[in-house]
Image (tube, rainbow, N blue to C red):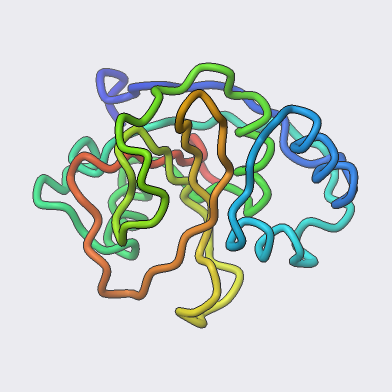
Length: 172
């Protein structure tokens, strides 16, 4: 992947807290959760994971070479072709804790069927294939309030060329 496309790259420590410690840390930092984020955090995927640093890269769908947008499967494939991989499922909450600067959304609407302006979607493998179960996390700031939100979509959902994703830099 060309360095010129690396919009934002950072190292973040992921894991190391029990589920209750992670929820407590999110709460003590004033981070809001929606019901989908709470459902994801209730998954055993968040039990006793060892702390490890990962480097993440933030890109738009267009910067992945998908100028007309694409469904998740195509976005994930394009990222892999550029040397990126999916983030561990527990990246979202830890990145939310580490990310102190994020563009505040000018649109306060919380649920709209598309990625909200200013949001960062964490590219991770879904915990479940069930379209009714949340697929993953996204980070958003609304009215100066940091949010960790879960989202749902089916395999046909078309993401916009301007939607921003966070991938793990390099192979998993």
